Each structure stands twice: as C-alpha cells, then as structure tokens.
Amino acid sequence: MNLIESDARYKEVERFVRTSLSGFDGGHDWMHILRVLNTSLYIYEHEEGADLDIVVLGALLHDIDDRKFSDSDPKQKITSLLGILGFDQYHIDSVIDINRNISFSSSDKIIHKSLELMIVQDADRLDAIGAIGIARAFNYGGFKNRKIYDPDYKIAQAGDMEAYRSSASPTINHFYEKLLLLKGLMNTPTARKLAEERHRFMEMYLEQFYREWDIGK
Ligand code: ADP
Ligand code: NI
Image (cartoon, rainbow, N blue to C red; front, side):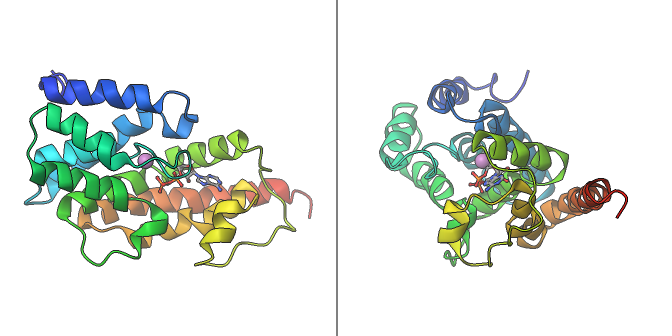
C-alpha cells in the first residue's frame, strides 16, 4: 500500500490538492505533485532528522495558489484544511512555511530554511531539470505560446526577476536563465548527487539541439 493510501488524512489532502490544481498546465498537475512527493521521500530517507508528516504535507501542498496563477493567500486554506484533519499548529506553520518559501524567486531572500523545506525545495527543483525538466519547460513554453528557440533573443540577466517573469523569451533561454542554475542551488547532499546526472543530460541535450539547428554551418 502506498503512503497516501495508508493515512486517511493524507488521502483527504490529496483530494483537496487534485481539486485545486485542476486546470493548471501539464507541468503543474497532480503528476508533478506526485513526483515531488516521491522525490521528497527519497531524499527524506537519505537525510537524517526530518519530520515525515511535514515532508509529505509540504510536498502535497507546495504548489497550492502558486503566485503565477493566483493572488489569493494559501495560508487560510492550508490552516483550515490541516486544522480540520487534526494537525497541530507547529505542523500547520511548517507546511505554510514550505508553501510560501519554496519558489525560485523568493528562495534567495530567506535566511533560515527548515530541513523539510530544504527537502521539498530540492525535490521541486529536481523536477525542473533532467529529462522531465526539459519536457516541462517546453510544455510551459507551449502553454505560453513561446518560441522554441530564437538565436537573436538575448538571455535575461540574473537577478532581473521582473524581466524574467514578464519576458516572452524562447524556451531555450529558460535553460540559461534558470534550469542550468538549479544544480548549484540544491540544499541537501542527496539532491546534489541526483542533480549531477540530470544537469549533464540537459547539457548534452543543448549540444545536440544546436548541432541539429546549425546543420551544414
Ligand atoms: P517553481 O516550481 O520553482 O515555481 P515554476 O512554477 O516557475 O517553478 O515552473 C514550473 C515549470 O515550468 C518548471 O519546470 C519550469 O522550468 C517551467 N517554466 C517556468 N517558467 C518558464 C519559462 N519562462 N519557460 C519555460 N519553462 C518555464
Ligand atoms: Ni512545484
């Protein structure tokens, strides 16, 4: 029996998340949440000292009310859901902390990260790189009607988050603006190890991409 099936409270959270995410693009669907949960559990098993409930709930609820899709405050929703299910304030606050601080853009502003935040953030970032990350990037680009590649389009400067969010840059640019940076941002040694292979795969992918693009040149 899998972990979610083993606990009626987790099952209830799954139901809530599935409903909340319906209508999102394919990169942000329930399958993304499940991959992040599984990767979080893998990291949890290889690192010591994290709280399992917080890792599981943090992974399940990490994309609720993603700022790109919604302006509403996830805090209330998470508080009432987990409160009804009987979780204590410490667990509720820890899950809200993960939801609030997981994203790429807000991550460099936080000073202290809980171990559970580090784990779920690593898992979320691992899902953005490697073969799956490449699939998600082009899926997102298609969702936004972006070009695949345009050799004349400049890469956005690091730190210019406004330009990054609003830019209509081709999806290949996103590799340089974000995906190739993620390996260096992993929190845990376990994730750092997993990131190596996925990072190399993206580099190989880009080399092959340009070879095909520049055929005959
Ligand atoms: P995070 O989970 O860190 O908030 P996002 O929600 O920004 O990540 O992105 C979700 C997925 O969509 C990731 O796989 C990411 O690489 C991809 N994505 C986000 N922005 C772009 C973009 N401008 N071009 C291509 N892919 C993107
Ligand atoms: Ni996510």
